[in-house]
Figure 1: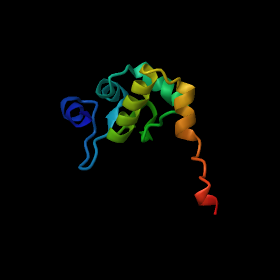
Figure 2: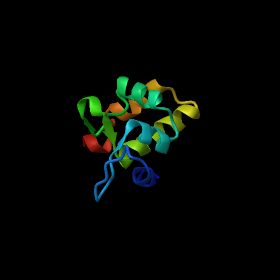
Figure 3: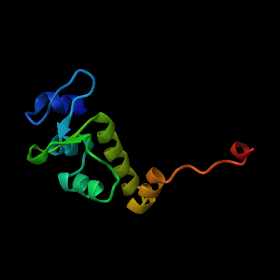
Length: 99
């Protein structure tokens, strides 16, 4: 989906493997608003793949999928704090891993 957006928008910078798009195109591809992505950045749920001063922040397909997943989880009842905890806390070791 982001590849289609990248081809059809002047905001996109294409590369052979994964196009990088600006926040407006990423928001459109993920089905959220630019402000939602700004908020996810502010609370540490996502980071742009690169930031180029006033020319904007750039996102790839992997980040767009993550934004979409965060939004879907939030829509189904997970709080952003729950989602943040899942993403940012290291997994606990199982009893077998401690042996």
